[in-house]
Each structure stands twice: as C-alpha cells, then as structure tokens.
Amino acid sequence: MGPVAERASADISRRLYSKLAWRILPLVAICYAVAIMDRVNVGYASLTMRADIGLTAASYGLGAGIFFAAYCLLEVPSNLLLQRFGARAWIARIMITWGLVVILSAFVQNTGQFFVARVLLGAAEAGFYPGVVYFLTRWFPRVRLASALAVLTIAGPVGNIVVGPLSGWILQATHLAAGLQGWRWLFIIEGVPAIVAGVLFAVIMRDTPASAKWLTDEERRELQSAMVSPTRAQLDSAVSFRVRLASGLKNRRAWAVALLLGANYLGVYGVIFWLPTLVKGTGIDDTVTVGLLSAIPWCVAIVATLLVARSADRTQRHRALFAVGMFVAVVGLLVSVLGSGQTTVMIVGISIATAAFSAAGPLLWVIASPRIDGTAGAAVAFGLINAIASIGSFLGPYIIGLGTQLTGSARSATVAVSVVVAVGGGAVMLLRRDIPVAKSVGGGDPVRETSA
Image 1 (cartoon, rainbow, N blue to C red):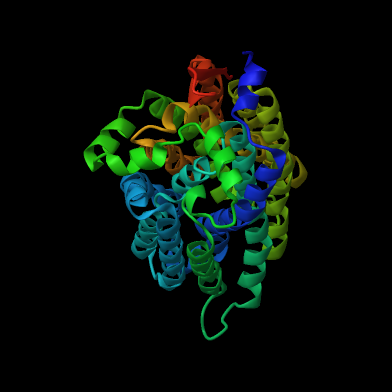
Image 2 (cartoon, rainbow, N blue to C red):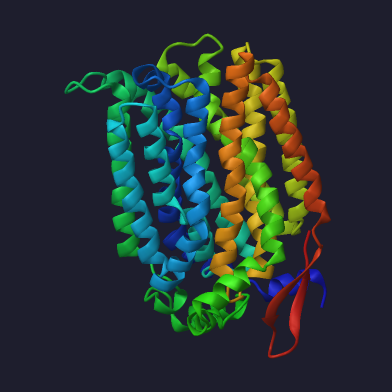
C-alpha cells in the first residue's frame, strides 16, 4: 500500500469532516482568539500604563514574558487534571479563571503588582492551548488535523486583529470614566469575553465522539476507524497518574518538538508584545491608528496559515514547510530591523515574519501527534511540548525589552532572535521522516505513513 492509499485509509469523508468542523471549530477558535486578546492586550495597555505605574522598558518586557513562567510550570499538571476531569470541564475552568484575573489586573498600582498579575494570569491559563490540541486530536484524524489546527491557529491572528483597534478605542473612549484610566477599563472590558466563552464551552462541547448525540452510530464508527488509537479512552482511564506522567515525560519526540516550537514562540511573542511600541516608534502617536496598523500583520497571517495548512494536508510535507516558514520569518524580521524608522517598511517586514511564524507553528503539532497520540501520557506530552516551548515565549519579549533599554533600539535584540529562529528552521529536518501510525486496517498490521 503506497503512502497516498495509506493516508486515505485513515481519512474520514468530507461530509463528516464538515460536520465536525462546523460543530467544534467555531467555538474553539473563538476561545483561542479571546485567549490571545487577554494575553497580549498588555501591549496596548502599556502605551499609557507604563507611565502611570512606573514601568521601565525592561520591566515591561519581563512582566510581559513572566506570564509564561507560571504557564510553563503548570502546563503538565494542568493537562493531567484535564485528563482526570475531562477537556470540556477543565478548559471551561481555565477560561473563567483567566477572565477574572484579567479584570483584577485593572487595579495594579506598581511594578510589583504588575508582575504578580502577570504570573497569576499565566497560572490561570496554563494548559489551555495544549489542552485544546489534545481535545482536537480526539475528534480529527491525522490527515485532517492540520486543517483543524489551522482554524485554531488563525484564531490567534484574528484575536490580534480585533485587540488592536478595540484596545486603541477603549484607551481613548474610556479614559478617566468613573475616575479610571483607559488602560484599566481595557482590562475590565476585555476580561469579560473569556468568562462568557468558558461557560459556553462547558455547555456546548463534549469530550469525545462517543458522548456526542449529534453524531449517528455510522458516523461514530467511521470516525473511530480513522483515529490513530480507537482504544485511547479505555487506555486513558486504565493507567495510573504515575504511568501517565512517566510516559509523557519520556517521549523523545515531545522534547524535540518542544525545542523547535520554542524557537517559533521566541520570534512570534517577541513580535506580539512589542508590535504596538514598534509602530508607535515610527512616529505615530494616535492609539487608534497604532491599533489599526498593528492589525495588518495578522490579516496577512490568516491567509498564509490557511494556505500552508492546505498544502500540508495535501502533501504531508510538514517538516519542509516548517523549515521554509521559519527561514521566511527570519527574512521578515531582518526587513523590519532595516526599516525600523519607516512605518511602511517596518509593517511589511513584521507582516512577513508574523505570517510565516503563524503558518509554521501548527505544523509541529501534526509532526508530534503520531508518536504521542494513543500513548498513556498523551495529555502530559502535549503539555510538556507547550511548557518547554513557552520558555521561548518568555524570552522573546524580555530579550527585545532588555535590548531596547540597553541600546535604545530593538535592532540588535531582533537580530539575536532571528539567529535562534533560523537554527530552529534548520533543526526540524533532523527529525526522523518515517512516522508510524498505530492504526490497523481491516484487522491487519499497523499502517505506516511517510511524512515530512
């Protein structure tokens, strides 16, 4: 059986995929868009907040990145609890908790309290993204997973598109309303959607196809036959906490993918948290205009992510596409450095980098899934990947903030980030190409797929 036939044997019908996609992906995408908004709105709040509470550039960069310290430490425990309580209940809990923390962030008075608020937000959100990825792997077979993850991923750019103009408007329209500065209203207003989305997730979603009443028996059988491990639900419930933890932590593919994703996160979060400041640094003072211009790179990212995901599902060349994406991102970062004083050139460079980062990131989850999905420690391994990778999320904004404070410019720090991104792009090709898919066809031997 050739590679194409093998992939087809583990597929589902277009009709069933469409049904799953419309039932699951819109709410999942909204939840992730809200997560991104609440994670990065501090970049817009900082335009006026820094002067009010005495934040230096380095302190802001540290505070923006320190979110990921608690996030990293609690990723694996959070995903273990997700397995215990179910994805639906646990993801809803995460969202409601972080919404409350965002609202409370409106009342920080100094640098220390700002740091505490960011740590609490990281703790509250820990486990969300890998939990959602784990949730999607229980609904979509591997040959459809890149497309499903692409919908999730483009929700990130959508969140960034919305948060820019919305935050700029809130900063202006609500300043000193009821005696509160605009940045405080920004946190209060933008914290509410997470709570609402969390409640909706708990009410609408189901943990597995087996508990979805909107699927027919025939659709359940078709979906089960296409999944990597039809018996994973039984496996999850049969093994102990210690076995799950050990299995996840010993997964070598998870560690390798985590380091590569860390390089991707280093670049993308360096851009996310400093983009409003970079735009403002080109001579634009109006916060609404800053927000609108900051949305442009994310519009480009949506198109790039969808096109690359479609190509990945068609060709199954995930490694090569990831490598190309990272190298293109480096080019974009360097263009932004060369044009840091010119709005148009800087926006073009950042748009190229952001689009490439956004398109490349989800490919790594697809590369990881065959060697993780169906193991006792699947949820732990997914949490481990995001936990280790999130170190890059912490270092990205901090490196750029520190470099800006020491040199008066983000140029040298951006070049340093570019080097790490380039190394990550090249290193992905060292991963083994043959990936076993633990699925038997017609009761025969396990199928093996060849995937880049």
